[in-house]
Amino acid sequence: MADNAREARPAGTSRRRFLKGCAAAGGVAAVAATGQRAEARETLQRPPEALGLLYDATLCVGCKACVAACKQANENPAEFSTVDKLWDTPLDTSGYTFNLIKMYRNGTMQTKDAEENGYAFMKTSCMHCADPSCVSACPVSAMTKNPQTGVVEYNADACIGCR
Image (cartoon, rainbow, N blue to C red; front, side):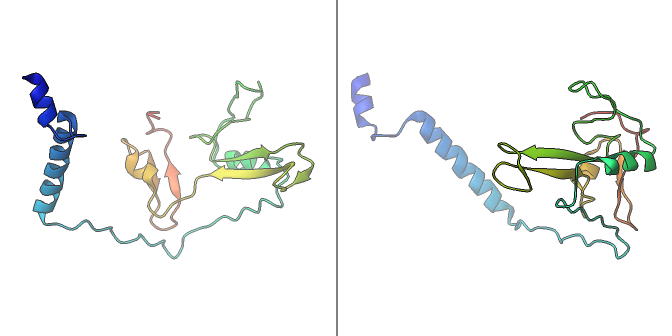
């Protein structure tokens, strides 16, 4: 009798596939029943007094003076890197390192800014986005956005280090 039941089922239809189809159809029906359209919110505008920073990678020689100057201006302490055993050579941006210079290399590294057998220095830093996700994601409001300048600010005293 079990053999007859298997033969009566259309080819390619299984119980699992049937249940998946029912669940998908139910989900579509539930969304359609709400009657609301999904709409994107308006793009946030930058304030007229917003600040900007220009970085020209073709002029960068990788000295990292900008990293040191940023740390000094923001009174951030030096960080220790366990990779190269040197002080103040962070591997990524953090609450104490707001910008970073990284070297990207390819092949023999004979020519600066060449795609093949070249190297380049690239700056990684906070982009001070118009709508920064880091600000909305921070559970203790350690990240805030200055409404006048557009600068994303970090409060180390409020941070609980959840990342």
